[in-house]
Each structure stands twice: as structure tokens, then as C-alpha cells.
Length: 374
Ligand code: AN7
Image (cartoon, rainbow, N blue to C red; front, side):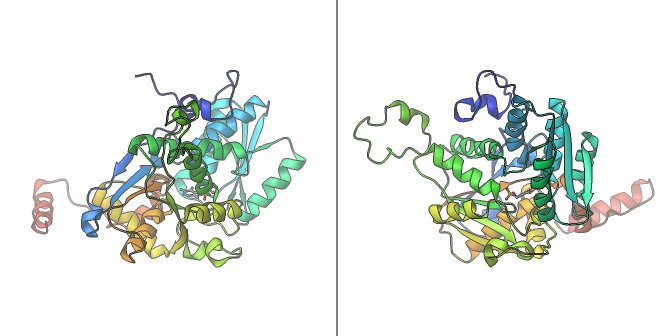
């Protein structure tokens, strides 16, 4: 098998690149689709739940899929600098891909409201980190103004190449499962990713499948199409940052899941369209529910995702409990970012480690005490 060199090379036929495009890649994509083995048993539901673990991308989130495309196209167009507003992960990805490309990177982040791991990445990769006294939505507005007055290329998801790269997640899922799942659950912040997923699934479906009298499944068009259907899309927002559910922008969004602390999503209308076309719905989870499921996933399946990512599973578990999703179905949850991104949250909700003398006795006691409870 050929050495995997990233999603643009793999899917170049389905992406807006030419043979001359200088590809900027960190071998992103190709993330594992992990079946959850213990959770369905725990909740006593006969469903297949898969986690698409995007935390295993090079900078630890799904943003790398879009950033390889956005930076590749920026470099192709001769850009010398990129800029983004970010709740953290976009800035980490932009900083890394700009470093790879040898161009400058400016990131606007809400002061004090991004997870430590993400901040460390933006700083370490050498981007110019500008903390604003405002939230993500303020940053997003400013970045759009700045792109008019300074020679910088926006790499937020209003840049259409971002969604082009991100749509490849659907291609990978279809390849792994042999078809689209029945349902696909994911977090919704600025709402680009749900649109990218929908785009990827839509491009994979053969409209001929049901009744292709002409080619009987053998035409060129047919060969490229890999799925017979599209999933029902489920988008989840944090209760304190749920503009799509409320039907209006949220002026001061708040949630422990800082990645999705967004009150006025740029891709709002397209996200609504994806939800409606798919027959899906939006739902919300409280911070408590998000953190509970983040820990549950870490402790029952060994998968450590960040709080924003856990909302896809938290929302799904609620809707399963409510009977909104039937038994016998296949569901994919996108776990958008790695748990290591936000170590403060993980430590705050875990048991504090004990300290003992460096001797056998006390440690053996701890082991015996703990084994009693198992
Ligand atoms: C882990 O980094 O918006 O609905 O500036 O980091 O496509 O915005 C992050 C978003 C979900 C929401 N999960 O995706 C940013 C930023 C994680 C994220 C989302 C984000 P969109």
C-alpha cells in the first residue's frame, strides 16, 4: 500500500486542485473510525455507534482537514500571510500549516477563553497571537474587516476551501462502513463542519442507484459514487451558546466547551438547509451533560476527546433515551478534537492524585483498597 500523504493527494479528483498546485500537508485525515463497544451495552440499546476520532489529526482536531486546503490554495494564489479568528483549534491548525508553508499567521482569540493546549500550539508554531477583549463573534467580524484593509488571506470557514477539505471526512466514513450511516451526530459552533459533512455525503451519493436503467450501475458517473444514501444529520449546541436552537444570535455565549462558544455562526443558513434536507434536527446539552459524557467516554471506551466534541455523543445519548432514534441503526459521532487540548477541564473533573512516601507498604495498601471495589 502506498504511503499515505494526506487528504488532498488521496482525494485530489474530488478537490479543487490541479497537478501544479503546491500541496501543503501534514498527512492529515485518515483518522480511525472506532466502534464503541461498551456504551451501547451500558445504555441497553441495540445500536452501532462509531466515533470518528478527529482528535488524531496532526494538530489534534478536524480543523487540519480544512486547513491543508485553505493554506494550499492561499500559497497557490501567492499569499504571504493568513489570518483567522478562533476559539482555539482553528488557530492551532492555521499556525501549524502556515509554519509548514513558510508564511505568516495572525490569530485573533478571545482573551482567557481558549483552552491551554490550543494556545500553546498557536504560540509554539510561531503565529502572531492577538488576544482580543471580546468573544469569537467579535473576532470573526474584525477578521473580515482586516482582510479588506491588509494583505492577509482569511482561513476561517467562510473561506470555501476549508469546507472542501473538511468534506473528506464523509468519504472516509463511507469507505470504512461501505455506505453512509443512518445518523451522523456532531457539535455545531460556527456551523461550517456540519455543512462540510453534508457536502461530502451528498457528493458521494449516486442518484442513479435506485433506478439506473441506463447504465445498470456501470457508468463512469456511477463508479465515482460510493454511497447509496445520505445520513440524517444531528447537530448539537451547548445550551448557553445555542443560537440556531433559539432562532436568534446569542450576544454573550457561555459554555465550558469553549470551542463552540459562538453566538452568531457564519454558516447558520447552510447548516439549517443541511438539517432540513437530511430530515435531521438540532439539539442542545448543558455543560453538566457535556462533561459527564466526556468522562463517560474516556472511562468506558478509552477515548479522550475535548468537551465540545463530547456533545455529539451527549446529544445522541439523550435522543436515544427519548426514543427519537430507533434500534438497529448505525450512527457515527464526529469527535472533533483531542481531550489533551483542554487539560484544565480534564484535571478539574477528575479525582486528584494522592501522594505517598516512596515505599512499598502504602502503595500496596492503595492497590488492595482499590481492587476491593472492582
Ligand atoms: C473541537 O477553532 O470555531 O461548527 O475557531 O474546535 O464547524 O465551527 C472551532 C470549532 C467543534 C465546531 N468541535 O465546528 C475555532 C472553531 C471543536 C471545535 C467545533 C469547533 P464548526
